[in-house]
Length: 320
Length: 320
Image (cartoon, rainbow over all chains, first blue to last red; front, side):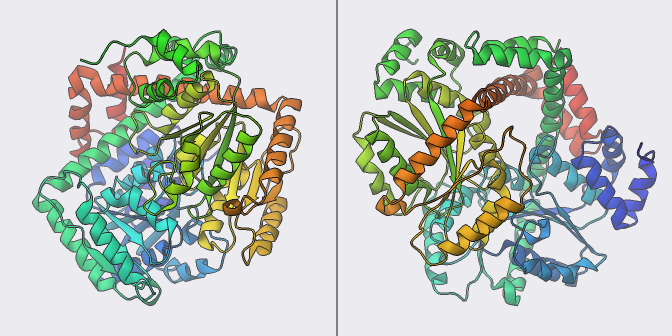
């Protein structure tokens, strides 16, 4: 039996900046704790302050190094920063098998920084469910900026990073297919492009290609147009941090000036409410008749006795 | 007004091998046509024959070249092969911006091959919804083997490729972070490993690392253990095709001998039924009170008037 959960005290301690309380709250989200809804209800009045920045790009472009550079720059401005690392290859998430996790240790003892790995596959309810609620935890805990780092290839990862106020897409020279994949998939979600490793051969070609693609692409309608800037960085040496901060600040101003911030936060809340409702319905479907309803219907589908739509109909009918 | 849809005739023509009928059926799935359920009901009695093979790996390992090689080898055995290309960077899916789409044209005029791109983001209901039903279309249309090609980084892509009877994971030497990401994410879903570009420097190191990781990893319990083989290929030159076919054949025999094929097909049907049911419920939630219910609740969440759980409760209550 776990010790009883004092929700109000936990939220108070998280808001006082105690890392263990923040970690506990995030675990409650990820484990879908039975009292999570009480937790979220207690957190909600304290939210709405944090700026949410998504950071994505294909493997190997230097996402973790760039996150680290951005973390450092934001800390110099006195901002408290939370990081949700969803990229399974990120050293933040413990997924890296090489040595670059060491680079993160400089932030490990900084009380203004909180880093959380969400890389485990098979979160109960999935990333769409856990991420907005994790953002809510960090927001209520008083972090000024929340960075969501995710690998920019998969659909669910793109969906997650779209929850941000501002989305940064990282590229690097000489990635070949990787760059092509990233460009095809994430061009339209980028608010700010970063070409990292900009001291390498091919950086100019990458930037030129990117400029061409931006001008050729049918731009998503986003109200008054925002011209996606391209920032050059060498994150491993801290080069480009100021230009990146400037681009992010300009985007923040644009968001506020054009009512776009409200629109994006509405979209984030919609995704959160839908995900909670669907997770609950999924649990109900799976549990009908102690789970027998689903398994019996599935067997009949495999045996071609009924088609999957008829099975889904019967299943949904069992809800009411 | 679109011409009326003669479902039975369309299914008959698809089963006769008419590519346009197959393409039409796949479009009905992707567009969530109102009469899709009639289509699926008409297809279902004809399914259960095809072997489903998933092919995944990080960008740049040569997935499309490998798919092409495997296609050629299966065609030499007289098999009819359908390809569902989910990787947005794949030349199959039209996402490639370089020249290698040309490589695919050798299959373009082969009536025993059908290639379908599913790379568009934002399928109605998502990949989890569209993929199993697309498999059903190709299965009913009489294809012996269905290859699902997807980039092996995102969570939803991994979920999709898990629907296969056999999952091939491709790696290549010298990919650095990409390989690490792939290994961390897809090690446990691989039935067969392929190290492509095996003539390159570093292939031996990659294979040695892979062997170490296989022996170190806590193996997922899959009934009687299957020892994941590692096949070396140079797909661009057709090297390793025979070894790959052999490994796939051995896995097929193992699946049948250990009751695992039935278990996987049960899992695939479960995913399909759940996805159809949840998609229907999602549509119902979004449409409550002409969409007003959701939007009103979301506004209240943004205003911190209610928390997202309370909003989800109210939303779900509206269903009954």
